[in-house]
Image (cartoon, rainbow over all chains, first blue to last red; front, top):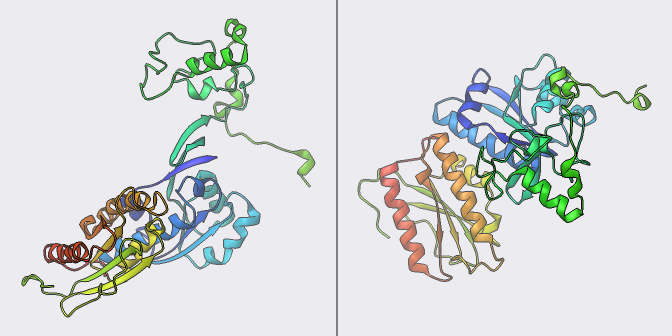
Length: 222
Length: 135
C-alpha cells in the first residue's frame, strides 16, 4: 500500500487559512489503512480544525466526505457536488489523489493534508515498513524476495558492504541489514550460489530518474 | 462534593466510561458542576473523534474511566483507550485548548469514592485551566 502520515495541525491550519468553507476529502483505500486519511481521520481532523479555529475567534465550515479511491474517476465523481460547494478541497489522499482532484476540478484549489511517505507493508498493527521504491525493473527474483534497492541503505546490488554489525545496518542501527536478510534467506532456500553472481549497474531510466512515467494498456484504451 | 471558591463558572465535564469499570447512577451533576456520562460497552470503543466532539459540544474537561490494566473483560480495551487518549492529549494541545483537559483513569469496579475523587480533581484542575476557550 501507499503509506502516508497526516500533516501537523498547525501546517494544515496555515494551508486552509485563506478559506472559510472547505471540504475534507478522505480516501478509503491505502491512507485509510495507515490511519492517515479514512473516514475516522477526516472526522477527527474536521473536529480539531473547528475547535482550533473557534479558539482563534474564526469560523470555518467543513464538509466531510470519504470516497473509496481518489485516484479513480469512478469514485472521485461521487464527490463532485461536495467539491463544487466548497472554496477548497483539503485532500487526505496520497499525492496522486490530491493531483487527481486538482486535475478533474480545475476551478477548486486542491490542498494536501497528508505527507505521502512510501510504498510499504503493514509489518504489524501500527507499524508500517517501506518495501518498494517503484523502480520499474523488479529484481526480487534474484535476491530471494528481498529488495536491495529499497531495503539496503546503500542500494547495493552486489552486497554485502561489510559494514553491518549483528545484522544491523551501519547507516542506522535500527535498520536490519538487507544483505544479512538476503543471505539468511538464500541459505533457507538452498540458493547460496547466487551470492557469487555479479550484477552490472542498473538502467535507472525505468525509475523516476527517467522523467514522468506512464503505463499504457492498449487493450483497455478505447 | 465541594467546589473551589475561585471557580467563577460552572464546569462541564464529559465522562466516557466502560460500564464494567463504572456504572453508578450517582455520577450526576450538582449545582456547582455538570457531568455528562457516556456509557460504553468497553473502553476500546473510545474513539478519537468523540473525545473532540465532546469539547465541541461545550465540555470544559473530558474524562475517560477504564478498568485496571489486566482486568479488561475484552483483554486490551483499556490499553487501546489509553493509547488513543495519549494521542488526543497531544492534539488537544495542538488545538490550543490545553491537553490537561483530557485525562484517562483506571478505576476498580464499583469504587465510587475513587470516581468521586477523580471528578473532584477535575473540578479543581478546571479552576486553574478555566473554561474551554473553544466552547
